[in-house]
Length: 209
Ligand code: FES
Ligand code: FES
Image (cartoon, rainbow, N blue to C red; front, side, top):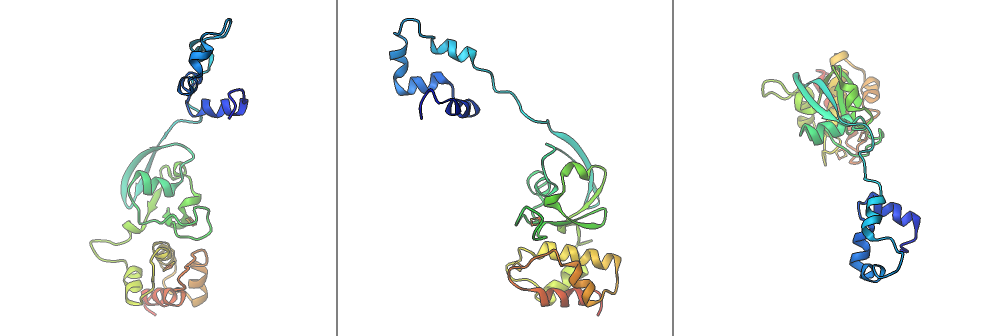
């Protein structure tokens, strides 16, 4: 990479590598210091702009998480999924596609299922978030979780938290769903292992059918 390449210079500045360090490591500094009229590496460093913080700072977020108050501070770009997994250590919610295509990251926001990878953490401010970790109560599995176990509705299990959250959200609002309503409820949840028939029967079982 040429030292006179302006794009290379820009990349080095972004990486925090000074002109002085490059010259020193290549041995060229000793040669240049002897040139009449050449600007010293020190002068070059002084002329280079300092790297400043770019973008907005962290924002405080307060929410109700699995029934309890929770606070965190995140940059506005952070998704609810990343906040749950990386900031709040709730890794039951899975990051699979990270672009709203698979439903593996399904959580409840104010009781309704959402893809947490498509929801900004700052949009959860003042709201209620329920994750798979918050579904069981008093040490007892949620009826949907129990039915998934009994109906063997999982193989690798990666889609399972999202499937369970979608089925449980359906039953929270519809105690006796039809087969069509069950299929619609999990239409956004993809299972590469093909467990759909078992998921449907587990949801029916949890509904007492
Ligand atoms: S990880 Fe969010 S929809 Fe796939
Ligand atoms: S059980 Fe493997 S992806 Fe659904």
